[in-house]
Image 1 (cartoon, rainbow, N blue to C red):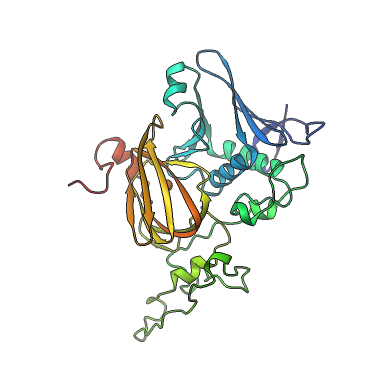
Image 2: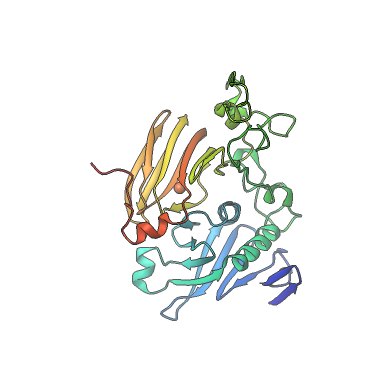
Length: 338
Ligand SMILES: [Fe+2]
């Protein structure tokens, strides 16, 4: 392992030379080791009881999860790559853990959690996904819309990895804000949404309010999403973030909430597995069909399965204080009490 630092890279990324046969570099972050081969990502660590541990994930599953963790800036709360490995965002630092939120690993004492400055884990994950993603594999795309993640190292797909998340300041389509999606902007209608009307609403604003009164066709906007499980911000009012997204196949991570999150199923359906965020113990199975709404309480983790491409509106409370208010008991873990 060697640490390569430069003036532009204040946090050195620790990695090996490329493997002589499969071509991938190995990475180290704190005492965690990351290696990939033709089919799998392997993570190694020493459990807090002193036992040497290893854990393997399908390389495609690992890269899809890694992509979300990076693109979402470590997101709200927990990003579990699976039942063992994941990150917890402290908004300035990030925990990387193995088994810490798995009841059985925890009980056996083979878990490990280490905390890193956000920039250090981000830089390491970014180099890892750039090195481990082959040409033709897009970790943001639905499995039917991309090539294979497997095999020996074969080029890269940095264009896909470095997509910028679409974040409106006020509302999509407003003057000076994020523009609407179009063929010309490289956003054709997805194969699953060819029947979605593309007409836009008529807006008749009073003189002087032309840049304030606004509306757009959200279904048309979503029909042109090129990625899956990657919420964009379409409207922002103080800390109320409307984050619609298109979903297909499975959510590549298991999201553990540090606040309440609302879901509105806009079309088709998603099946959710919900569990205890600390142990992973199953709690509920939620089948959401078009028009259904649900809220994920702050004590749960959840993973969605979308049998065909569907539209989901995720409503996030982006307050920087809400997570601490919940921890202190000043705000509830549930959206409503009956
Ligand atoms: Fe979530």
